[in-house]
Image: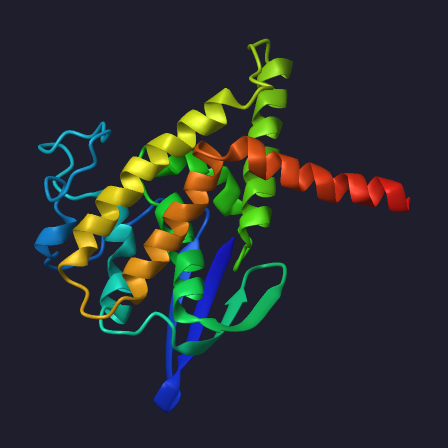
Length: 226
């Protein structure tokens, strides 16, 4: 499935990005900047070898987006249209919110072995997801994986311990990626988008129980109405 993001900015500027959920991640052609090299702010939990992987796969996936918006203000209003093979989404949003959605997709579809754990969610991408939607989708996808593990004869993790561990690993990656692009961004749009994404991952690793209670309360309200 192809997912296309189109940003309409001031002065009639438009920028498009296409992400495929089927093709293998490709490294951008030409000379790559130093901040994309693996050893530059390498994640503390990175399992890759610098000799075999000279460039960070998440950084190279983010590169076109970071370059396009490196001087842009995070809170400017943009019109964003997101198209996939099934439907079209459109929203007037801050650039920060739209970039959080696109960068999250780019990172999940990269060849990073840690961020690759989000690939199943990226295949069913939901643009502009709220924190509640992110929690609901994260938990739902994880429980579906546990169900398939049970069917395959493996021990399922119904208590979500693995989900918390996964998001703690993701936080380490998010922190390192923020450090990577900090020096090259004159504007704050990319930086704040990553911080926003980092905050969502934190809601799973540090406050999952309270987030689940909030969702439970909303679902119980639905039961009472029914």
